[in-house]
Image (cartoon, rainbow, N blue to C red; front, side):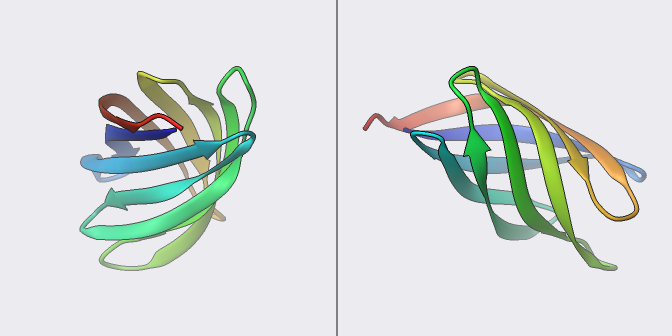
Length: 102
């Protein structure tokens, strides 16, 4: 299944808008997070209730950092807590297109 979400990242400098393309196949999940003018891949695992653990990288104007995210990805919404070595962020979003059923 492929989903496309509009997302909002709550950072120290305020809210930042972007998109998230998500591919789910069984318990595996991957995709691309496009935010702060960069698109970076992520990957991880998801259970049947939508609870997930993701890993990826975010690139800002000043630095780039690896993250681990935990939360829920449902067919209509996303809610994640993103943890880096120095910070914690909230990411929320809603689906804008269900691209393909497999």
